[in-house]
Image (cartoon, rainbow, N blue to C red):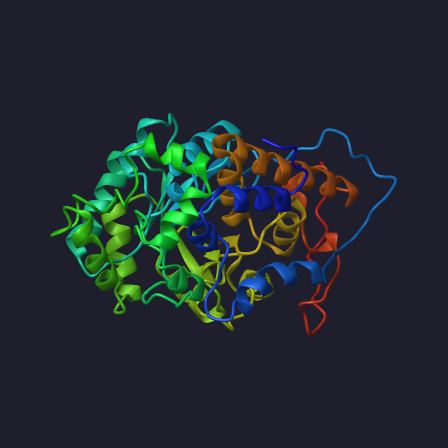
Amino acid sequence: MPKTVEIADLKRIAQRRVPKMFFDYADSGAWTESTYRANEEDFRKIQLRQRVAVDMSDRTLESTMAGQTVSMPVALAPTGLTGMQHADGEMLAAQAAEEFGVPFTLSTMSICSIEDVASVTKKPFWFQLYVMRDRDFVIDLIDRAKAARCSALVLTLDLQILGQRHKDVRNGLSAPPKFTAKHIWQMATRPQWCLGMLKTERRTFRNIVGHAKGVGDLSSLGTWTDEQFDPRLSWNDVAWIKERWGGKLILKGILDVEDARMAVSTGADAIVVSNHGGRQLDGAPSSISALADIVDAVGDKIEVLFDGGIRSGQDVLKALAIGAKGTFIGRAFLYGLGAGGKQGVTQALEIIRNELDVTMALCGERDVKNLDRNNLYKSGLETRPRAAAPRKKRA
């Protein structure tokens, strides 16, 4: 791989190596993409508090997320069609995360199956669940995740109905790709990607095909997926899913204080402040602009995690300083995967770790768990002053 310094370098390489329809899938939002852009842009409005003449030695990024020890408070987010960014993408990303000491979250809409990922990993990973109309299939997914020893279930709540993503519509996105002249051309101009795909049998939604009722081949898959996201999903569904699962439960897609309070009442172990990467409700606030109010409302009652717009270790630090206990990265690791497979994912994680470590030191901190709002100089996201939390004693 070419030398990379920041996540934007990986993005440029991935754009050259991944067919346009699949790169666009990873790199797009809903409708006008205003929320997608705000997720990144609003991080830039938050200023850090520089400290000098303090001991910056013996720094540690080790923390916990959902009760699991992590080498840094970053997890790989659940992303659909990951195996179309690079052949066997979910398996490679899971291996990279395991070796790095951070959680990997497998999407329901993955190309590699739960069993595929379990076959190449030694430690438990997390599984993300979409609630489908076919409840027997949902139960089967939960049981398969339990059989694979997944250590947390991430239940996504913000995709009861699919937000329109204009790029995907125009590209005619599908997995496996349709063989129109346009798609053949896109793939032909990415020979390295094509070679990888020819070497694997994993080219469709393997969590679904052969498992869901009536879905035994590709011809039946499209119709099934179009009809299956359940608009009737309610908080009552969280209760039976929690009971069936029986382990750590994380609720993803919380962007409103009232919803955060409802999530607490379910008995879930953690919530993820997220707007689905700007891929659902365009015009919604950025995830980072919603984080402080949610932390203030429920942060003492439930673990608050964060997702949306992180493209650097500085972004991770800002989310942690506002009050998140851990963060997810989606596009940042997908760019790495598309750029260089497992090695690219590792490079993305190394970039994030180095930026987080250096920024933490320049803010005068040695332990990532000590970050709080005292480390922020000014937040351009706030319309009123917010009291800083009591200063933690240094170790």
